[in-house]
Structure formats: C-alpha cells, structure tokens
Amino acid sequence: MKYTSKNNQFGKTKILLVSLISFFISNAHAVTINGYPGLGFVPVGQFTGSVNVPSGFAFNETTAKSAGFGFANITGGGDPCTANQNSWKTIDGYYGFEVGTGVLMVIYDGSITGQVVSSTGGANNVNGFYTLTGVLSGTIPPKSNAVNCYSYLSGSRTTSTATRTTITGKYGYYISADAALTTATGISASRIGLRRSGGTGTTAGNYTVINEGDRIIILTPPVTCTVSTTSLVNFGDISQAQATGGQGVISESHLSVNCTKEAGGESISYPITYSIKPKTQSGDTTTIPLISSSGGTVGNVRGFLGATASADAGCVDRASSVPMNGTQVPLRTITSSESWSDPLFWVLCPQKDANPGPATATATLEVSW
Image (cartoon, rainbow, N blue to C red; front, side, top):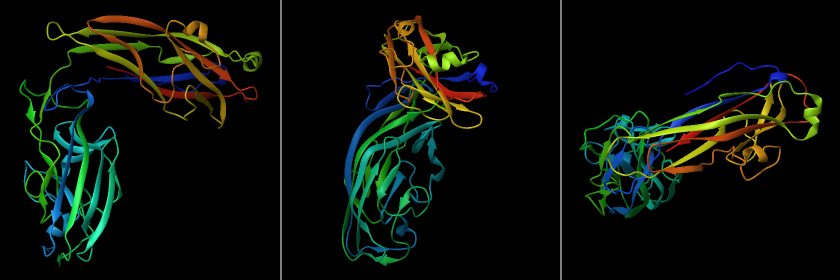
C-alpha cells in the first residue's frame, strides 16, 4: 500500500513512509518449485558445460548471429536468434527467460570464458560474468540481435581455428507478484541452454543445458500477512533550542504485523524480515537526509525498533537502530498464525544552521516473509 502527502513547512516537517508488502520463502526442492505470486527469487541449482566449434565450419548470414554464443529455448526449438524474443525480459530488476506468466528463469553468479569465433573466422577470448540479478557483462561479443545472441561475426565465413566456450554458474526462478496461478501439478519450465552455431555441446547436441526438467507450481500463499504502521510522521514545529540541543525530535509509532496460516496443510517456519530504503536522497547506514525544498540537507532522520527503542531513541546509533540502506533485518520466525506490534520511534536530528522552510524525506518500508 502506498501513502502520499504534500510537503509542509519546516515547522511541520513530514517524513513520508511508503509501505510495500512482498512475500519471500526459501525452497529446498531442486526440481519442483512450490511458490506463490510475489515469492521473489528462488535459487535452484548449478551448472557447467562447454560448446566447441571446429575449424573449417562454414557460417552463413543466419548462423553467424550465434557464432559467439546464444541463449535459446531448447524446448521451443527454432532459430534461437529469432524465436521467443519477447520471452527475454526484465521484471523487478531481474533479467531472464519468462517460462510462465510473471516467472523468469534467471542465470546468475556465473561466468562465460574461453574463445569464440572472431570477425575473420579466427578466435577471440571472452571473459563474461553474471550478476546476482542475471545481467551479463564483461569481455563478450556484441549482441547480434539485440536480445540473446552474441557474435563478432556478421556474415559468411569459414573458421580457421577451433574455439571452445565454457559457461559455469547458478540458476533460479524469480516469481513476481504478477505470476499466474497454476494447477496443483504446475507447469513444465522451458529448457534453456547456451548454444553455438555449428558447435558440439556437453549436454545436448550443440547446447549446454542450464535447467533440466524443472516444474513450477504457483498457488495461493499458505500464509497471508497484513502490516500497519504510521505512514506520515509529523515532527511538529521545530524550535531553535531543539535544533541546537542535540537530542533530536522524537515521534512514537508502532510496526504491527498480523499473519494468518492457511487452515490445515504442512507445518511452517517463515522468517519475517524488514528493510527501509530511501526514495529521495540516500544518507549513511542508519540515517535518511531531510531535504529542503530550496535544496540542501537540513537534518537527518533515524529509526529505532523493538523493546529498547524508547530508551535508545536519539541522534546516535544504538542496538535498536534500523538500517536505512535496504538491508534485510530479521523480525522473527513464525510457525503458526501470529500477531505482534513492536515500538517504532522516529527521530529528527536537525542541523544547527538549517534554514527555515519546507523539508521532506521519503522512504520505503518493506516487510517480507
């Protein structure tokens, strides 16, 4: 849920908290993934393999597009550089192949090394790597189709030397909030592999297969939670004495969570976490800067959560300080339906030389399970 508010005078400074609820659960299955919309990223397994292209292989205009390498839907078949192009996409920052509505197969934390065919039919070295969200970069050929094929070669050519490309890494599935529900038996995920035209792969023809025989089951979540907290924090009129006193201006709130387990079913053990991330200017680990409408920082906002929040609240770091940099912090682990409310204190620490006027800050508070 999102809350919005207009800026106000510095004497009535407001901090806008945008509460977003998302769902994350770990999964121990390597082949069958049991999930639900909004589950997030589920790591599945590792892979490694290589594809060789021999000397004397004749490329034409079509096959030259994946003379370096390409990523193809082995299940769907067809030319890997023209088929299924719309299935390669980015969702919530993750990049991969959409195996079902709102579900991506993501290659991550891996590398592509060795050699590929050069623009003259010889060999070029490659050294590419995957980020944790599936983005490939490094020393790699340019994309030949702007999507999933990479090649230095752009036309007909016969190779003058053999080349070998090796891929190693991990893969998983990102299940977005828009993931479509499946039947209880789920869907079979498309098999994706690294392919080279004219190559011989280690796992399937001219492919190195990334994922093999996975099944995705998307059902309604076994646990539903609601979260409530003060969405708009008003620190009131700020006096000169408060600005120079060093104690800060405190606003008391609560973070309340109510989780309900679906009747029946298996036992659960769900970790509940939270994170806070600035939507305006970033501060340091435990602060968010308050930005004046005329520009510049006029103070910082801190948060304190938990049993000692009232005693800790102030303008220095304490045990109950909440990270303001997006770090996931454990709240508790639930094993059944459960509700609780933790004290949450916000502290405005004004700068001594701050000029009067409107000032605001915006952050996202995310509770995850």
